[in-house]
Image (cartoon, rainbow, N blue to C red):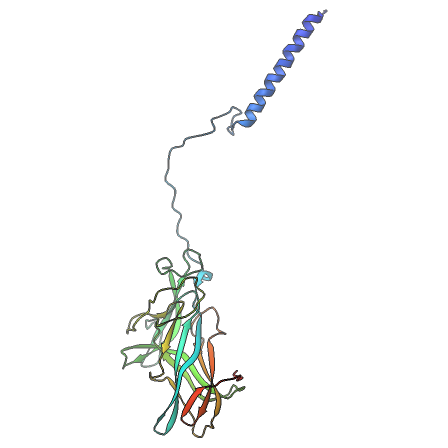
Length: 289
């Protein structure tokens, strides 16, 4: 069958129009959102019925998120000598600081056996609830505990002292063997001097007067100062100790009973010059190790 030239041109024009229209529709569908189960375009904005969000179950804080303290002794202060019953006593103030991010806290609880006149204490550790690496008492309320040693009954103070909180030694320069020693000194932890710490913000004083069943501690950025006039704040100098320069050492937690971030920075030392019944901090370079 023969087709006229006019009829063929008309058919070609109709076909071209169909291709153009189809192309336009295809472009339109590329720009419109499409349902996953349909090729038809849908509205760009869909209004859904409001629904309550499910509250996630609280997750336990891992042990590595504990906010640990870091005990440090500061150099002894207020050094003097008194004579008691013919014995020279080297007196000084001892300062234990908490330079960590969490409190050092001990609670007398009697959970484990201790010698007569003593009571077991647990170390209380706080966990970082919000993960910011800083201690906030209102937020970081999750705690765990571990054995922390024993506390001594201090009858004249009517409260417990943490045993082996510090040790004091006197050495000759360049030597480690002590010429005088007080290996175990007990403390009642308190906040009474502001010191630098790893915390970004200075915390307010929290741990005050000690009680028999009350938790004791030192907040980050605080120190517990034991004045030179308090009991046990001295070293008995051996008879016949020659005059000269010596090194006075203070060390916090000498038995490593407490968990902290660094056990290698607990000690401090100051060189002193002893002359008879007089003593002063020694000037100049002195090799204390």
